[in-house]
Image (cartoon, rainbow, N blue to C red; front, side, top):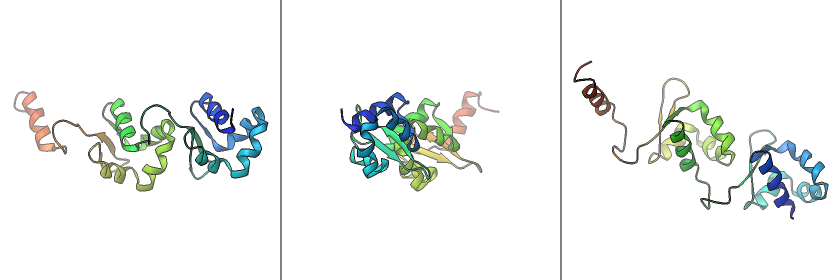
Length: 166
């Protein structure tokens, strides 16, 4: 098997991603691959084998991750984030984006390049962002129904459910 296949298998066993500095542990198990990987460096090696591996820069040693074979040809950060937020009940605090990055390290660069708020606004067909004086709130837009949340309509609906007055 190739160095890329062995590294992908190794990373998969570590939960699908690992810190770049952990490559030394991989070299202990696969010393025959050290020359091939270190000749280019971990990042370039992952990029050269993008069908199997990905690399996310994080200001430190970076993150090596295994690409999912099944599913979309190209990872779509907006779709994956919308699905993730949907599983969290339809909204999540902006600071929880770090948990999303743990599951989807390949999207960190795309989202942090703009910032969470701007990323949500750029993908307004799927995601919304509500500023709240803190980290903000990321929410999934309902595909059916209103294009934009309308506080007046929502309040009227709520009051109606409460018997017409509060």
